[in-house]
Image (cartoon, rainbow, N blue to C red; front, side, top):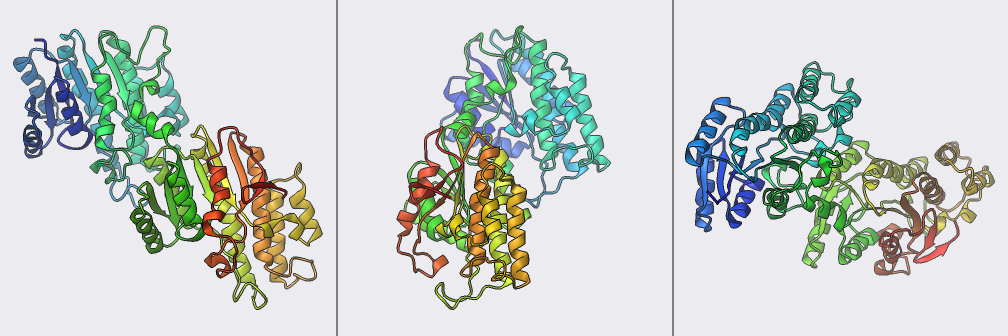
Length: 560
């Protein structure tokens, strides 16, 4: 037989279905498998209706040994050999959404491991004798970037799975069984397993490790693992950012590679599983930038989103209020800005920030640009003479403008460090210039560039709040007009320097857009939002190797 025979597991929908289409388009005879006969048959009808006549269906339940054995016998009798096995079947094991309300139980974890890891193993072992009859055999295990070793927080498990030379099937099984035992005994936190999607992460890390084991054992078969990126499928509740057509390209590429193509194991051991972790995922990760803009449902933040999107950046517009954020997205889409999405984010709510970080991690795997724009004035009344500054409003202002910015930055910096051109832009104000800090000690502390630390900035802020609480603003010579706003922005500027000093691989700057005509100042500003957004956008789009630890007035370099 000259025509190649391919098996795709879990292929009645999503990536598996698309892989079948692309393989059939390349002259491969495809056996589409699914656990459910009705769904599998319906998938075949769709393919035939679309002109893909060289695809057939056979039932296969990857966790049922009898089903696997029956399937192997079918191939043996029908075709006498197998050329391509794509282990695509998988489940998440998550009950609820993939953001915050998921639930991981021992039962769901066990189902996930049984399908994603043991199912893949059982199918591979049963079909390898048929693959060995091919003169160009390959196994492609569809994995996930969540299965990267860096996501295995349990140190011993990470060490075992990463030990390329000493890796064995037994060791991989031991890691998996140890994890299941720990989740059964409610020891996930104690044993430092991943807190989010633990079973899915462990199952995919085990799949990756077992790919290495197989490749080392069967040198005549090209065996690789691949992650398609976060594809928009039922597996992730349609939250992915990659189409199924793009997602299928990696597995298909490895399936159709010429004879002598790569396998995870080489005698000189220079080939790592991550190397073949899908060209498309690399495209998603490195070829277009992901930006977050906080407080972006209106004003400068809204305009920043527009200008970034106009420059080919994928923008996540965030707002505390879901209704307002959704309405902002509708306005942008109506204006032709289709590459902007919304996610709720309250910068003073740790749970909201954590949920948001998980969304980015799951959806995009990294972050390139963070623009901390969310802020409030804390003023009751007009911005001229009849304002009132209370301890409560001052505290709210500091909590949003300073501590909110800090919390968001700290949570997202690990994702920024995965970018090859990361930047943080803190939207500040000229009121935050040091010359406006009339308290001499505070001005000295915040202006001490060499000795500046996060603790010192916090001390200034807490000292100010204590003084306003005790009605000592005049006695301690704090600014008489807009004191909380001025202190919050001066602290933001100082913390920008602290971050820039600590994270040398991230470009981190502060910028004042000028007095922009927005709701923040009751529309009293003299600068348009279009002009005000230019400074933050300029810093966001600066070439690699741009400045860090500096303060800009609009688009020009300024002093602090």
